[in-house]
Amino acid sequence: MGSDYGRRRTGLTSRYSPYKIVLFAGVLPFLVGLCIVLGFVNLRQGTSQPLILSSRAQESAGIVKADCPPTSPLARPSPPCNCSSELHAQSTSAQLNALAENLPQKEVHKVLSAANSADPGDQVVRVSAQPLEPLFLFVGILSGRGYRHRRLAVREAWANLAQRPGNSVCRFILSEDESTPQVQKEVEKHQDIVFLKHKTNYKSILYKTYFVFEYAVKMYDVKFILKTDDDAFVNVRALIQQLQMLCETPGCRTERVYMGKMAKESGVLLQPGHKWNNMVFYNHTGLKTYPKYMMGGGYLISGDVAAALVNINRTMQLKFTPIEDATVGFWLMSMDLRHVDHQRFYTWAAPCCFKAPVRREGQRIVTRFQLQEDMDENMCSVDPWLVLHKVDSPTKMRYIGTRVQACNSSDIDPDAVAPSLQPYVRPRDALGGNVLSGTNRRR
Image (cartoon, rainbow, N blue to C red; front, side, top):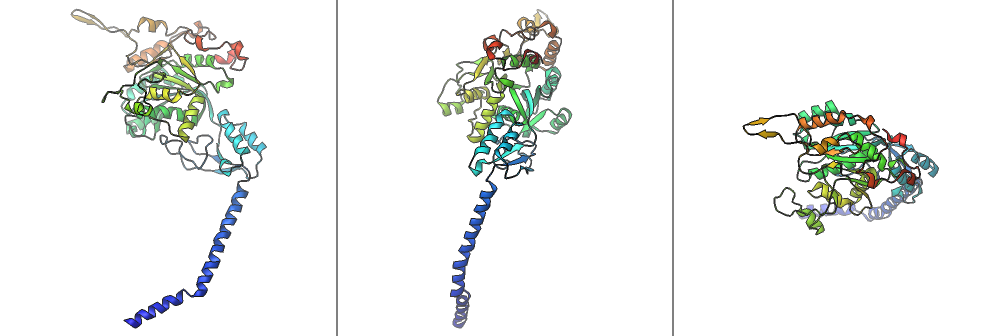
């Protein structure tokens, strides 16, 4: 037994002779150092000029850094990037400047920054293979799995008429766990439902609302974004006319608009179990009163404001709380925006906007739907209702749609400013002719 142990020990000693130890100690560090030097030289050569990568990912966010990260935990993962070199590594700043001329304005500064940057990490940017489609108004309609009847009524009443590429687009927003076989048939037929990668819970409305903003700025070069619900009627034609009158910058690109029916000095409910309890907001801010916000049945922000929110959430996450409309107002409170408290946004919690059935002793007189007098008078006026929320039946939704479609628009001067909008519209001569001309405003 002792002799076997000695033989094994002698074999081990001979395996690691002094010559081999010297060889490993001298050559191996040299090889490692050579690899590091060669890698550094290749890195310097490869990033000496900005490198533009063309991404054909279906949901490309325009220009983003890094390798195809999802822009937020809410969005569906993009397909794998199919990246190819569009400009070689020796491309000049002049070539990058020429490329920037074909990009939406909000993306140009990123390309120019890459062209002038000495940081290799900043020199790699991604440009969408095709420029984003120009769009004046994107309408995001929050819906759910069990509300197919509402979506059908909304399409018939106003949404189908608003599907005008380049002018306005409407999309219903659902969570991915709301995708049932029936919903998928609806998707195949209408092509107007978008799913976000998030399961339904008490924060779903706010997640869907943020996704409206994110989806709009990812998929379109959008000027304005309206968030609304599937029980709301939107007069899209009149809304677009008024938004064009609000524009103060070339192409309506940097309007800083936040428009809707404003809630002022609304208290934060802290009662446990209450539908609108927002202890999360109170614990985060210490505030018992919300900042001013636009009520959630329908409100609008301009595309530059939405892009700012998306960029902030990409770099440092926004705080999400259960009360969607108040939280959006909280997100926007530090921005210098043009708040438009519009009197023709009916976004109260109370049902809109029909007379109650007439009752008499011993009988009930059933009549056709009748709008309240002030509602009916202003359906076709120069100052029409733009958003009517809490339309509590599909039949009423279709009735309003038929009523508005019957309006004779030739009786209204297209250049007349609605009284509800007048406090927020600057005279055209004061803008120096930098916005859309009167002819272009008559879409």
